[in-house]
Amino acid sequence: MKGQVWGYFCSMVLVLLMITGCLATDREKDSIQNDEETVQEQTTTDFITVGFSQVGAESDWRTANSESMKEAFSEENGYELIFDDAQQKQENQIRAIRNFIEQEVDYIVLAPVTETGWDSVLQEAKEAEIPVIIVDRMVNVSDESLYTAWVGSDFLKEGYVAADWLADYLDRKGRTDETIYMVTIQGTMGSSAQIGRTNGITERMKDHPNWIMMERIAGDYTEAKAREVMEYFLEQYSEIDVVICENDNEAFGAIDAIKAAGKTSGPNGDIIVISFDAVSAAFDAMIAGDLNLSVECNPLHGPRVAEIIQKLESNEVVEKTQYVMEDYFDTTMNLIDIKNNRLY
Ligand code: GZL
Ligand code: ZN
Image (tube, rainbow, N blue to C red; front, side, top):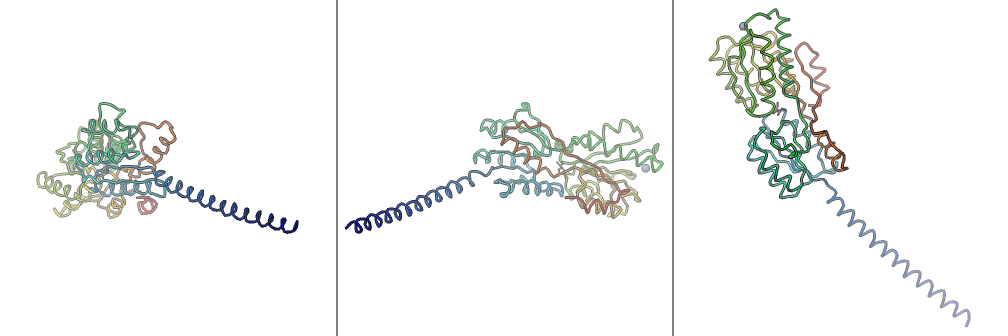
């Protein structure tokens, strides 16, 4: 009897163990299931959503800038990027920002096409408590608290670099006292890059009374528009010694027009061509002897903006104004080597 009871007892214990054991696995399974759910939920809620309003796709510089932002704000880096191309129209950027607010993104990044006209839409972002980071060009707003930080170039300095290079170049050519006839193909009027580059050169011209700026016309940073403007300048003015192009794509258009008019440009040509951005194709134009100088304007803002967002995520203070490093390149340098080691 005793053995029987003992047998029952052991089998009961065994059954109990099995039930609790499988229960445990069920419980374990549940908890794994829950974990998976929470992990699943976490991953979607864990993405930092960034709404980026980009100016457009008007130039090689802009393409490199967009690529830098898309690389930085990738899913594997933990972001969900909503990218909007405004085709260089401010109203499209304002609409995009309002959409980002509707979608309750975590951050808004704005590359403003021009400096003014942002107060009200940035006020709406502030009321929605969405931090705004400005990249590339500046916004000119009455209340600086409407944006958290700005990453971009010192455009005035870029203008100074171009003018100082020209003075040195003319010196080396023994043309310091010659009357130098100049024209400028400006960028998008009212954009920080246009304002800074135009003003930098204008300020430096005070040191060179023999430099005559005959006319400035906007080329909107595009090759096509710049070609038209340069054709006009070539018809208007019998002697042009220098053309200042406020980005490389304008320089490519201007060089085409100069060649079509039977003239030459570059270090051995009739017309000195100066431009800004230093994109890869500008190196090709300098190596070909068509372009004299390109003042660098660094488009790789993605990592800088991501760094700002990471700091904001951990409640660190971020600097309001952050300039990117820049250089200049001309035909006296080993451009093939330099080009091969550049990121854009
Ligand atoms: C400069 C940027 C300008 C580039 C152009 O930071 O805003 O806009 O110089 C681009 O190529 O179109
Ligand atoms: Zn001359």
